[in-house]
Length: 161
Image 1 (cartoon, rainbow, N blue to C red):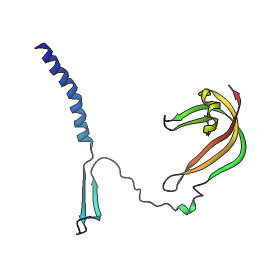
Image 2 (image 1 turned 90 degrees about the horizontal axis):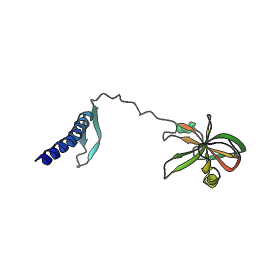
Image 3 (image 1 turned 30 degrees about the vertical axis):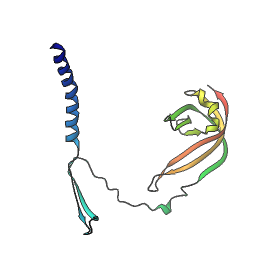
Image 4 (image 1 turned 90 degrees about the vertical axis):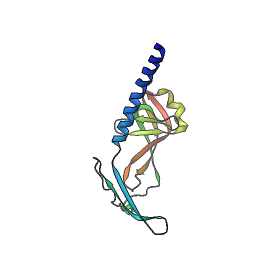
């Protein structure tokens, strides 16, 4: 009898937090109402309305961007310069898409895969490397400039601190 009672108490202790999370989820969903008018042919039309009655602010995202004012968004530019960089070697990203970087306070340069074996074992160390710098301008989907992505190729290790 005692084992059965302990089993019931354990079950209730596990069930209470689950029920509390379910109640939180039910009451945290915004209260929305929506309506759409049909075309008369059995399909929904393009008109409709959505009324948000929760506490969030609505942000106007209907503005347009004139992409003709931006630069070429597809090219990679080779500056042709061989530069020398002193910075910390870092491995970032995920296990499927890792990136090896040399980071300074001002900039980060991604190291090409062909040079990984030179710097991979020097992670978290300060190194000085020399290599050919290339950069690619990055843009958001709306055409706004998002920044430059710098990379180094033909890397030569100059010094390890």
